[in-house]
Length: 523
Ligand code: SGN
Ligand code: CA
Image (cartoon, rainbow, N blue to C red):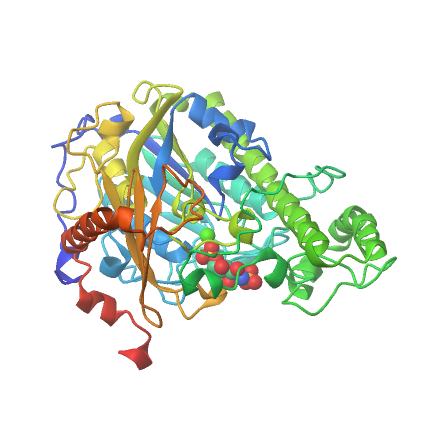
């Protein structure tokens, strides 16, 4: 099926599958909070061993936690394009971070807008083209800065003083306060944090000081049983993290002069004003001095890098958590919790040292899994947990369903509503399809596609490699043992390859589509 054909959608036909009446005021409001690179391993309600997120956990306590929520292409802009369109990357055309999103496509905010919703997009956007389908938008250009970031408000670029996570929340609360109260609303609130280069906010610079965060079990993975793909990546904490931009080191003991090599640390550092820099240096200098005095090498140096990375990462999350709390408090104060669907998720998962890595992209668990918490009082049972498979493909159909809009013809995902209401039908998906494209590219994760069932994961790496991997998630949850060539799994391989072909056919991801998205010189 051509990606252009599937863009034909029925916009605005009301009421078939929803519970909402025709009166827009009766429809639920939607607040969709998406942070950038927030791993489930760093969320309290997912059992984090390394941090606490009391406010994010409030959403789970009052709603549902998804244990098996997956992204279909584990990287930022493509994940957002899937969210908006409800279609796989090969269908919406946004396969990697390099291209501009085609905003003329049908998206769920556009459909909601046409059906009486007031819509806003605030914070991280990352799709290069201007947002469409939003009555109000105020977004970071590109990745944005942590301190004193620029915002593009309806086309005008304005620099705001302050810390990005607080500022995005300020703009969001202001919009909520000013919105029209005779319409339901959709607010997409995108946080920059905890994206690289993990600069903590002024309120949390000194948390975790003197503490040791435990190393993940697989930190020293040697990739022995895997294909060349895992050996040829460029995302090891020990190898890749630069002293300046990533690790925020100063040049030498006693100096606040920043290290210049290793990426562009000067830019974000110099963006701080004098007061902010003073607070920053006061926090980092003693720790940097201690580092210089130790003269570390080998594993000790790698583990020091891990500590610096993970603490900075978690500190940026502490601000996200505070600010989620501000939004939830506002909704409670205004009596809005009852009729508002609240979602917390991240554009993909992330490695917090598992396999020795940071970043995402792989179909392995930490980057495939998206945290997903949803609350809708009176509709989603409080404190519930589901194992059913959810995909980022499902967000658009879910919101349209709750708004009483029939979407059956247009999107590739399914409404999560029956799952959220503990009524998953017998034909709910038992497997999921994944396809990642951005190679050659940052971190050098090779192109791959695959299938995950509740027990197995089969992956095919292609382009400058032709390699298969199979993991038995029950026997090997850490995915250290590729059993693709183990004869005991021969039947499983045959069965999964068939299922994978079926999924590729079902979603229209043909050989021709895969070929179409190869780098130009290779077509
Ligand atoms: C930047 C980062 C990468 C990261 C990509 C994509 N490098 O290029 O580490 O993988 O963004 O991230 S940086 O040195 O510029 O920080 S994504 O979440 O936007 O897809
Ligand atoms: Ca991301």
